[in-house]
Each structure stands twice: as structure tokens, then as C-alpha cells.
Picture 1: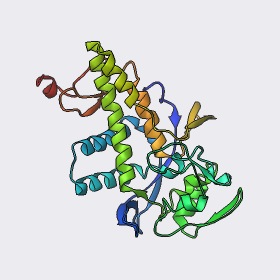
Picture 2 (picture 1 turned 90 degrees about the vertical axis):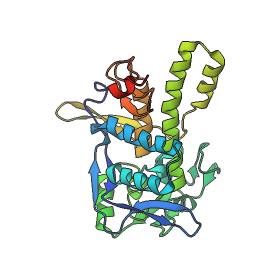
Picture 3 (picture 1 turned 90 degrees about the horizontal axis):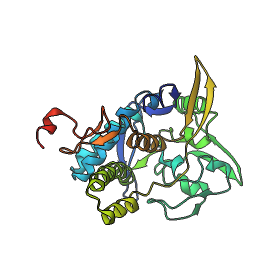
Picture 4 (picture 1 turned 180 degrees about the vertical axis):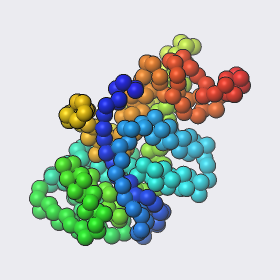
Length: 287
């Protein structure tokens, strides 16, 4: 893991503060506050912490923590890392604005296979729609917010939707966020249970785990190489969601310092060796 991402880079945007707001249809959305300040950061600088923080929220959902506690934790996560960028992760391509319609593979949120672009935007702009106009494949969007303009300039070589997902009126639904965090924790837990039952040589149970670990469908990350101080691999995730999913997959399959779920307390941690099963000596002594 350390060698693979030692000289990589990827960039994502975040605001300093987020709030929960209920839309007219009753769904609750997380979006930046009116006075929040934006910033851009590289999530690949500390990928272990990013993934572990996401898994801990998923485990809280498995423990059925109160909704108020979950909303506080997810809001804090967004303040640290930004929203997940679900809007660019769901379609078959992050370049969906360049197509006549939005094409969607099977996913747990939207059942339609195709949607008009403006209809798709309404899933993420429930309060104020962006100034967006489209005719066929031609489109244009505008903003007068200086911070949104700054994001657009920063990510001008990325798909248009990526910059639009940093607009102040862009929000992500609470139930959708919970589903994603819980799915990631499920993936990590299933991997741990699979390895436990593999030792017991239980083929029926192993087959059940294999079936239940189907990946979240959507577009895939791309990459390119830039010549900086040294050749650097630049990841084009277009969403934090894809970043977390990719990193989680790499960490779970790492042969040297893999991501593990503690056998005693189920806390996610990075093992110092492949056969390590406990996150601390305290948990090890509880076996």
C-alpha cells in the first residue's frame, strides 16, 4: 500500500462547514453552510485515515446509533473530507453532461436507466437549481459565487459535473450517505468473516460471502502521469466515493499491511503484518 501510493496524487474539494436541511419532499440533505470556506486537498496523502474514518461511520450504522449521533458524525466527516460526489459516481461516465441524457447502470438509489440531465440534477439540487441550460449534447452553466468560480477554474480539465458538485446548493441525501457508509463496512466485515470461515473449510458459507460481496456499480477511476519532481501517477476519481471504494479494495487485498477488522471489538485498523487480528494488546488479551 505504501509503495503503491508513495508518489500519487488526486484532488478533491471540501467546505469548512456543512449543515443538514430537509427538502420539500421530506428527504434530508447535507450541504455546505452559507458562510463556509472552500479548500482543495489531496485525499491520497493520508488514505488509511480516510478509509478508516469511513468504515467507523459504517460500523456505527451497524450498531444502530441514534440518528442525531449519525448525522453529527457524517457532518464531521464531510467537514474533514467533503461530500462524496455521488452525482458523478452514479452514471456510466462522469462526463454525463456531454451526452443527451444521463445513463445509469443498476444502483441502489435511482431505478431509471436514463434520465434527462435537469431531472438528474434535481436529485442533488433539491432547493435551488443551478443555472444550467442544455440542448442535445451542448450545455452551459454559470455561477456568480466567487468560490464556485474558483472550484470551476481549479477543476477545469475535469468533467463539468465535478465542479458543479462543489456548488453551495449541491447536497447529498442522508439515507444515500448511510447506505454507502454501511456498504463499505459490510465489505470489510464480509472479508474478515470469509477468512475466518475459510479456515473452517465451510464451502456453503464461503459461497454465500462471495455472492454478497458484489461491488457497487458505476463509472471507474482513470489516471494519467505527470512529470513533477519525479514521474507522478495522478488519479482522476471525479468523486470521493470512487476514491474511498478504490482505496478500500486495495487495502483489503494488501498482502503486507492489510486493512483488518479487529476480531474482538470490530474496529478497523491497518495491520503491521498479514496475520495480525487484533487492533491492540487490550483486545488481544480478551480472546
